[in-house]
Image (tube, rainbow, N blue to C red; front, side, top):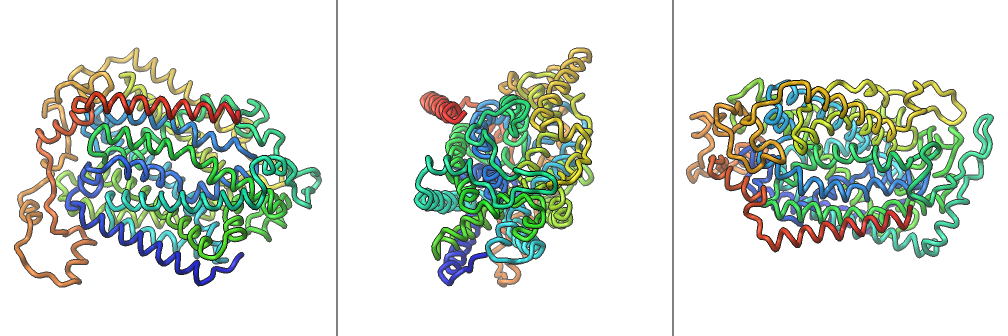
Length: 632
């Protein structure tokens, strides 16, 4: 552990003060007096903050800990998770978003209800998204932040988790999506600046990329014996290649091409947290420009995360490359391995005073940014998809208060899960997070692709994944007996994603062909081919989530702007926290909704802007293909 000096503390304080200022400024200028304003930022965001927020939300502390740790353990291949995302982001902006907006859905479960009808699928996705996908991500994100704090400040692991999570909860409960997006934009700039500085310092210290690649293959710890095993702790022979053996590779090439795709579609095209940001853009052009900006930023992790992780392994092989459980326990308090400390170790050992504090602030901000986004997305799904089913006449204030209370519940569950995560992530946090995605992604991805793009009926895809319990089986430490089911350690999770995707796709296609299709009027504006159709008749809609249907006379009176009455500071603060703000809720009329849908579906998009965005998408994807081929 390195000591933090006065300059570091000053940088941290200034940074958080700046973040707080931006968050409060954006909260004051945004209308958070309605569900639309609070959860969707009024659908008035510019492309630049949208793209920056997508990047900052995705590049959380789990990347600096998990991805850098995976790079320290096995080399370059982990960067494919980032570069593969470029193509999926284009898919989101060009194909999924126009359909989502045309359907009038605020959340992904709402879209599934509009597409397939009924309530069960909507409720099931809300529960699955909140308590499986959202929670599993939260656990990894919080653990990653706690590892960094522990390595930098020497704090207790659980104290770190509780402290950071509680601070994050307060920030999320008070702020809306607009505040989160603008704060993310600020954090993106400082994150790239700070991590870029670390990359330059690491390269100067080591002597360049050529020296790094030569020394990485030789970076073994002094102790390479573990139990009866010898020669442990050596880097893989294919560490400098992205495409690896389909049989012996830790990231096999078939899994990269076919297994990673459903995982990426789930994360980028159907995940409430990411889609919610794109839906907040003011027009479809801004939405597409935002995802392209995010895709361009996704090229950077190779240099700001992966390379520094490998440098950490070269400079500190005995700590980061340890194999003996006792040594690892002494180094990082984890007997399964210490590769996760590669990035924080590099920060506290190489960076000078002031810059070290900046990187610590960036790490904490990355953690808080991702958690606020996850909590906001989970709160949106619970409030608009579950709570409103029980109380269809809920007022605006009630819905936003319920959303805040659900965030508190999610915080408590996340903290309680940490001991299980510590016992099961096996020293490689990145593998844990990606395995969870591989086990959960295929059924939902097939549902969205068949229903949204291809127009098939995909309701048969949604059964409970029989391997959801797989993450509860811990990877054995070095020298321990393998006790996991064979399917969990003999079948790579990327290969499992391929197998499950094929099975689910076949079953759904067969069931869709053999069953009676939905009437054409039920498919208006819920598929790619019908996104320009006339709106559905109101009798076809059962939109309890529609704001005008929910609004009661007493709510109108309550939400009207108050007369110029003087409120104390305490009363104003209470109004903000409890949603009794003076903003007037912006209820959308049918004409306003139709105008907005036209903007998003491209009919109001200028031809030259459309062509420019298409060319930009092709250029960015071509550059990504070149990079993948160069390191393949």
